[in-house]
Image (cartoon, rainbow, N blue to C red; front, side, top):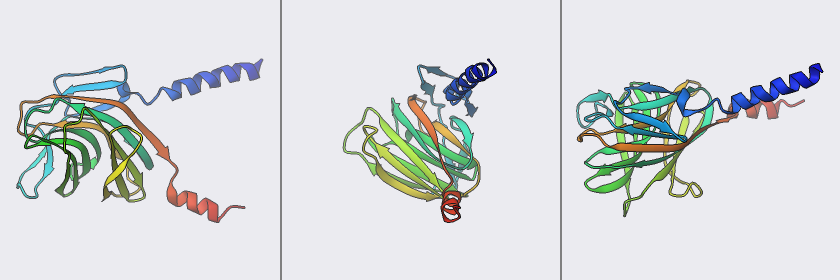
Length: 217
C-alpha cells in the first residue's frame, strides 16, 4: 500500500514539475503597460522610446525596455519563436541573456531603414552591434542560444529545423543569468511583439562531464 501511495505521489510530483517552467512563473524587468499570455504565447506592446544600449558610438546609456525573464545557472540551450508588427527604425524583438546592466546580450529581429535585420548586441560595459540584412520581410524567426563554459552561441532559423550560427560571444562562466524575451522601440511609439515556444533546456556542465569521464571507476 505504501509503495502504491508513494508511486502515486511521485507521479503527481513529476507531473507538477513537468509544468513548472511556464510563462506565468516568469518575471518582468521594465513591465510594459500592455501585455498578455495565452496558449503559451506572450504578447507585449513594446514601450515607446525604450531600448538597451551602453555608451559606445552614440554616447548614451539606456536600460528601460521591457524584458520578461527567468533566472538560470549553469549551461543551457534556449529557444524562442519571435514575430512583431515593426513600424519604424530600430523597432526590435528578441531574446535577451543578462547578468546585469553592464553585461548582456540581446538578439533577434531589428527593423532598420525599411529592412528586416538579424541583430545581435553584445554588451560588456560598452555595447557593440552586428547585423545580417535579410532580402525580404519574414513573418517570424526562431532564435536559439547555447551557453557553454564562457561562450554564448547564437543561432537563427526560419523553420526550427535548420539553424545557422550568427554570433559567438563571451559571457562570464559560472554566473547566473536572466534569460527571456525583450522588445525595444527607441525611435517609435511602440508596437506589438509576439513570442511563443519559449524553452530553456539544461545542459550538463561540460567541465564536470569531462572530469567524470576521465575519473570513471
